[in-house]
Length: 387
Image (cartoon, rainbow, N blue to C red):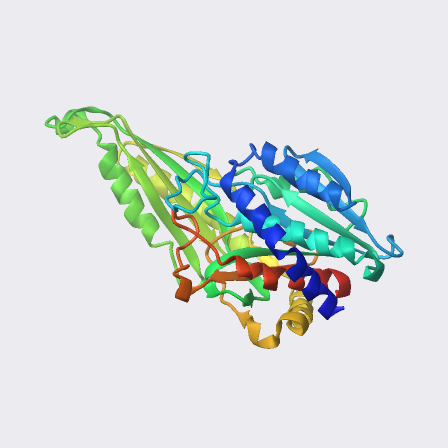
C-alpha cells in the first residue's frame, strides 16, 4: 500500500504542482472564491467523487466511497481564500489579481487536498468506508467559513469519525511535519474601542476632553493583561484620532486582538476589558464604547487521535520527519471542527533555506518548496486509508 501511494504521488506530482500554480496565479478573497470553487469542483468530478457545491457560499464537499461505504467516514479539510496583499515575487505564476495573494498557503492546501483525492480515487479498491473532502471558504475573515459550513451540515450525512487538516509552515524545512497534541492554536478575538471626549482647540484645556490621553491611559492599563506564563496576548495595532497639532478630536478609535488558550479565561477577559476601558473613560469624563468581535475558538487537537495520526503518518514518511512543535499564538478556524469531532491539525514544512525559501506567511514575498507535496499527500492518503 505504501509503495503504491508513493508511486502515485510521484506519477501525478507535476500535475498537482500545476494546480497549485494555477490557484496561486488566480487568488480570490474570502467569500469571493467563485473561480477557485469551480476549479475544485471540476477536478473532483473528474476523479469520480460525489460533489456538492455552493455550501455556505463557495464551499465544496466531495465524497469518495470505497468498500462498505457506510462502515466508517473520515474527513479532510482545505481552505480556499487568499489575502489582500500585493505580491512581489516575480515568478511566472505570481498573482494576476493585483492586491490579492495566496500569502498564507491556501493554494497549497487546496492543491494538496485535490492531490489526495486524485490518489485515493485511484485506490478505491483499498479504501473501506467513505472519505469526505471539505474545501472551505473564508478562513481568513470573520465570520468563519468553517463555522458556516458546520451550520450548513457538512459534519452530517455521513458524520465523520475524525477530521485531519494541515497548514504550511515556512519555518519548518520541507519533508517534515509538525505535531502538537491538545491545545495547539490560540483563540482570536477582535477588540474595538471608541473613546469619545470633547473636541476643540488644543490650547483650551478646560473646554476640551482629550480622548487621546484617555485612550493612552486605557492602553497602558490593558497592556498589563498580557501574560506569557498563561499565556495571554492582548495587543493593539491601530489607534486613530483625526485631530491636528492644535485640534483635539472628538473621538479616538482603537483596534486590537486578544489571544489565549482557555475559553473560560477568554470570555472573562472580554468583560474585564470592557470594565477597565469604560471605568477609565468615566474617571476622565469621557465615554468608551466597547465592541468585541468574537473570533475563532482555541484549536484543540484530540490527544488520542493526534498520537495515532502521528504514529500512522510516521510509517509512510519516516519517524524522523515527524517533529514536535510548540503551541502557536496564531489562530485558525479549523478550531471549530475540533470542538465538534476528534481532530488533528498539523504543520507542513515548506521552507528550504538552501533555496532561499523562508519568508513568513502573510508577507508579499511568501513562497513554498513544492516538494512538500511529496510528504503531505502520502501522509493524508495513508491516514485516510488506515486511521
